[in-house]
Length: 403
Image (cartoon, rainbow, N blue to C red; front, side, top):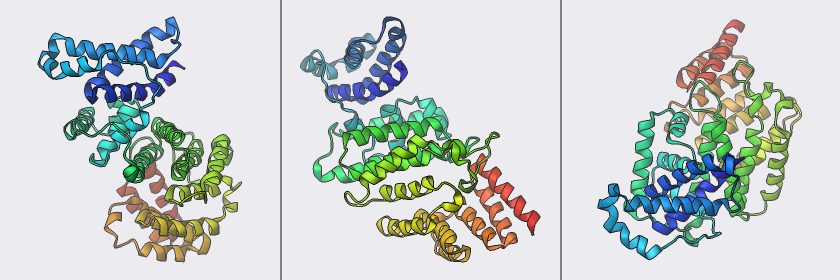
């Protein structure tokens, strides 16, 4: 499809222009105009033999025309030297998408700016689409993206791959940004929909790109595997009315078998082949869930063992929270509740509805319906996701009718 091809080529063309002219905003405007021209011309005239070169030529001309226009007079002097030195843009086979991704995820940018700029420049989403995904006004998101671009300009951040000494840490940030994009799509933090499939699909696409560019990096392979194995369950996560369906109750025939097979193969190819990391371990846990034919056949002791390793490799309250669920299933609800006790005083979990929802689940398993009812209601009042609110309220009503 032409739309898919343009989405794939857009960051390559943008990266090439930024590398050549060193300016983010004008280059992005020129690329958008080139993409619009392609979407209008290619369906009727056919896709050119070298579509990337076509887009580079059109975007380059638009960029030069803008700098030469009357409205750009005040910028003409400062850009004239660049244009004279650069001359006609040569067509290069070099793909600058990875460098663009590293630039968008530069540590000097705030976390929200990294997310927004990555989705805008590399993912090709419009400002309106990004604003809708994160439930903020379009003007607010436009300002966030604009500030990020200005930060890149004033800080003179180099459009190059980071040096070897910095690459591991910068790659960690890139993976984290892609993981956050995926999570926001898979369980929207607010709003009427549980899932934003456009965000999960874009995160998987970018993770594939990163994996292709850095095939030896086992954690990137683990990240892609985790996304595939998690997203494979998406179709079964809601019923026909859009209500949330918990993992144990999902119709596993609706899970995506091809994604599961690809994810499991990636786990097998990466786990134990290098320094073990959190994405590999989470992918291995997801694989155990996906390979269980029924909920009753889930290997909870093995999942718990992996969470214990994960807690050592990448400790944090969310890992401990997930471990509490595994403890509750492998060793009983009271053991799981004991693990939760370690999180009650953790400020990082203050206001997190998942702590109360897990507590409610374990209390229900333990037979304490009254306490479970209160915990479900508390969790429902803390989340801004409409499907989660409805599910937690329903569970509270069920526990109330049983005690």
